[in-house]
Image (spheres, rainbow, N blue to C red):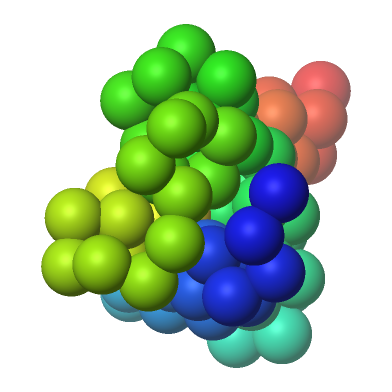
Amino acid sequence: MDIAGLIIQLISGAVGGNVAGAVLKNFSLGTAGNSIVGILGGGLGGQLLGMMGVGGAGGAAGGLDIGSILSSVGGGAVGGAVLMLIIGLIRQVMGKS
């Protein structure tokens, strides 16, 4: 695993979580919550894509070339946004019970 790719995934996950929280205000966890969940989702999403051979983190293309950086950013942002949405949905459903 490339540490630079992981850091990029974590940062883009935090950004993805906050962007998703801003767009989907009903599911937002607040800035800190969106960031924390986004960081977790960014790391998980980027690593899952890397294991599937799509991202640069786990694949043979790991490094700091533009393709690896873009795949780390994309995987991290999408992973962060998706996990923030899932947690926000769970929180909303639990609150309505």
